[in-house]
Structure formats: structure tokens, C-alpha cells
Image (tube, rainbow, N blue to C red; front, side, top):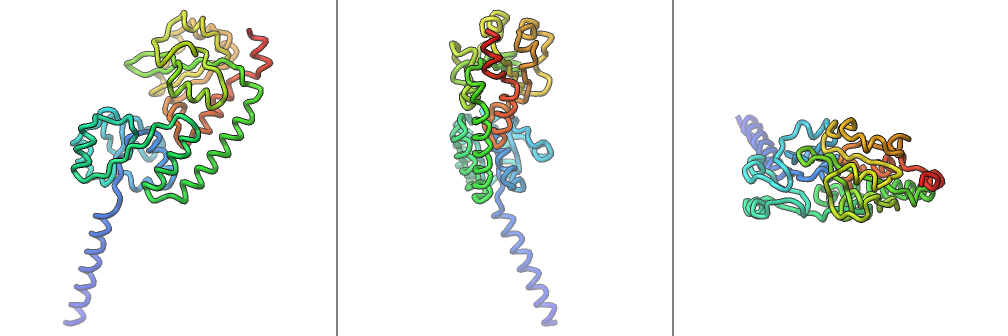
Length: 284
């Protein structure tokens, strides 16, 4: 009889311990594609209980998670229904009232600065690592990324004067030209390249005239979703010498412009279609 009581007590203690762990286990919602990628890259994907609509990578993780909407229009009910302990997002997130109410509901809300340089990207990786208790992994990832970026930059010496045109295919917003004060321009600057639209600020609608005036040495297409950019609809672009000579690249916008843990890969992909300085000089 006494043995049975001991067994019952032990079982109750085990159940209590399991319940306690379940209550304290981190439940993270990531509302930013680059932050989501970072959490997964740091080996903390088990903490994720939801992501926003900008989170597409890696698909084998994010495709199975609930979506809480777009980071600039986060829904209160959608977030709280997942019972998160932490919402990690950026300063671009909103609306502000929703974030305030989420915090009042007992959820830790962290808004990280938007990363637009390699240094800021590495700093954000370390911050995310601290938030998900993966500081050691973050230090390792940050070091590797820093070395990869430096190696790519060292290979860019003969391409510094190249002019690059970046287009953003953003669904309902159509095809936009990326000028100054954009993530696209920041990516070009990280490689020491020149924006072919350095006289333009922000994103502007694309046009035949703008392609001809840009006279780029390379063309980069950033798609919000695969297949959104249709080259046949833009003959003025596909007739440009840079396009005709194969100096163009079409890639996912978050990959190219997210400044996440794949930044070195994005920089390498862009660099691969930029011609050497000698070739550029002969082209103009």
C-alpha cells in the first residue's frame, strides 16, 4: 500500500514538472522574414509557434507554422490565440496599438532595428541569439557570416564601377524601380556598386524610359513571390545590352533584400552577374 502511494506521489511530481516546463517553455512568434531565418539558423525553431507573411524560408519549417498576418498590420487576436511568450519583430512592425495591447496581455515584445548593412545584420543575429538563448550559436554564425562577406568584398575590386539596376516585383504594387534610401540600394552599397538610379529616391514605378536612361551593366529582379516578374511584359528591359549579355538575376526579395543570415549568399549571387570593370568600361 505504501509503495503504491510512493508511486502515485512520484507520478504526480513528474506530471507537475512536465506542466511547469510546458508553462515556461518559450513560445515565440517571429514577425519578420529575416528574424525567422535567424531563429531557425540558430537551431531554435522548436520555439516558434507562429510567423508573419514575410517569412518564407526555410520552407520545411515555416510552411507548417500558423501565419499571423503581415508585420505592418499585425492582428491582436491572431497573435494572442497562439499564446506566445515572446513576439520578436522589427521597428517596421505595427500597428502600434496592437503591439501595446499584446504587451499588456503579458507577451514580451521586442522590436529590433531594421538591418541595412552587414554590420547591422551581424549585430541583429547576436541580439536574436540572446533572445532565444542561443548566444554561442549566434557568435559562431556571426563570425562565419562576417568572414564570408569579407571574402566576397575582396573579390569585388575589379567590379567597383559597375552600374546596377534593381527592380522590385511586388505583387499588387507592380514593378518598381529601386532608388536611393531602399534596401536594394543598401545591398549595392555593401558591395561597393553604383545604383544605376542614384538620382531617384525610394521606389518608383518602372517604365521604358527609365530602363533606357539607367543604361545598367547588370539588372537585378527581386520578386516578392516566385514568377511575379514576367520578362515578356518588359521588352525594353530585355533588349538592354546587360540583359542580352546575361548580366541579370531574378531572385526572391527576402533573400536579396532581407539582410538576414543568408546575406553573404545574396551578395555572392548579385556579384556573379556584375561584369568586370574592363568589360564595363568597353560597354559605355
